[in-house]
Amino acid sequence: MLRLKAASAAWQTPDFDKALAAELKAAGTGHPDLRRALQQGLSRSSHVADAPIGVSLLAAQGAGDRIQVRATILYAGIIAGCSCADDPTPVDSLPEACELVLSIDRRTGETRIELGRD
Image (cartoon, rainbow, N blue to C red; front, side, top):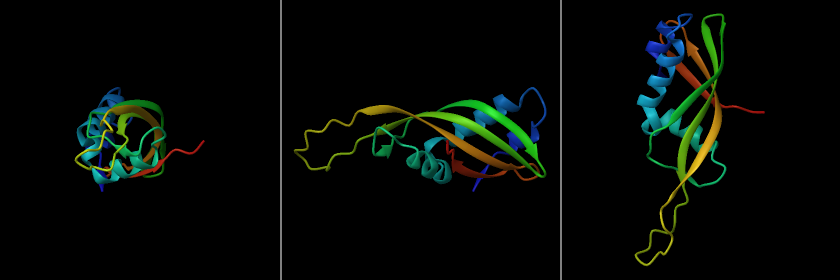
């Protein structure tokens, strides 16, 4: 499970946005929970690329023992070819963006991630 301990510790301080963005960027597409959510958010490609992500906080509010966050994640996706030796498909990345809803436990930093629904 993704743990955002620095963000939960920085809740209700001026550093919350920076702490959240830094932890999400550090986890990146290599974290299985974050990668799974980003995979669901793809709109132009078929697989999440192993590339840095960008984070833009949209909203955050306290709800009981949890912090509810909506954030836009900017990342890259690829269209995977057949991986044959003579496959002419170049492996270029395409820009992707999706909205995620993060539910952070204030005490432990354990975070549930869902794809934002409009």
